Image 1 (cartoon, rainbow, N blue to C red):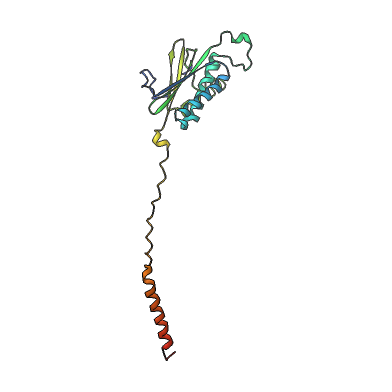
Image 2 (cartoon, rainbow, N blue to C red):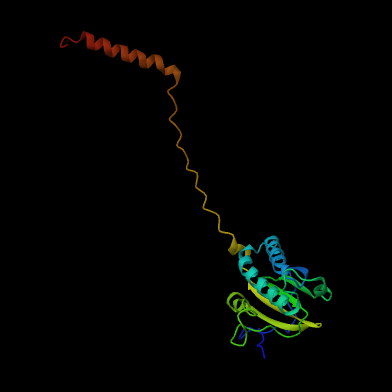
Length: 207
């Protein structure tokens, strides 16, 4: 029996989730193209929410969960026949922004919890799920309707911590005032003294 994807010492979301700040959702057909569509949706949404710092980790998680949902409930053939699309299942990707975290939820029509990467899981079927414990702050799964929701939570640093502090402003140094020029009315007096000094030198018999 596959183990439930629940982080050790982490509580499953049995209690109601705190009031979200933002919520966005995308419904996809359970086809291989759902992975890339979910990635684009996640990147654009987190960018709009100002949570760009967790985009890389969020893409790892959403890719793993959506790919697992497609492999479990959908059509994995990139070129399926029309007959394979008659009973095509849906996948829902929901992003929930809380006060200091973002929760990624993926719903699919399979009621069984996803397996953790272990000896019971072959390399193909669980090749990305083992990345979730290495990336998410907490994670788990719970039944919903005829299927289940698998969720993972990423911590978002407060906005004040994301924006570097401004550089210190250079203090403007006061420039000393230049000495006031000599009033023009004193110029003749100075000139007279200079002329008298020169005459004294000419009259000096020692010269």
